[in-house]
Length: 113
Length: 117
Image (cartoon, rainbow over all chains, first blue to last red):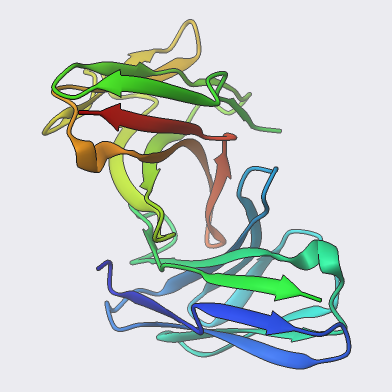
């Protein structure tokens, strides 16, 4: 248990659906991240939020829309996804932008049908 | 651009024996950090060990040690006295610290370790 909670753990959605992934931490961390882990590719950084401000968008398609309403919560809004977007989506946080250790959630296993 | 290479897609290790997982990296940044994470079947990434590029000594954390050879750009993980619970995917990662923008971790492809009783 790392203190970073992701919901749902599993999600199946159609290409025309809209869904949201949620990440929550009450560790007092100020930096939060979304990563994508596909079956045959290394983990890829998607977004970075630092003190609720988005500081990094790693060329992510606009069908993925992040939201960080406060330092404890991070969302990833999904719409009109493609089957190749099926992956494990991992949220991470750390205390500040230069902290050594990042704490990861258990991920949301997303399947797009 | 940073790059991490893990050349061992999978390996078996006998319980109670030591195992070395290979990791090589490439970066032009003089300051960087190297990490190892464990990912069990449950999915979360568990931080194991960290080595800073300016650290003089190899990092150790319990049964984990990092064999850092800066000139060769390698950061191999050694797990001593393997346990059945060590069966998992292991990822090497490198950190690029972009001021005020946060940590950016670049991950290798991972090595799957299976500990045999």
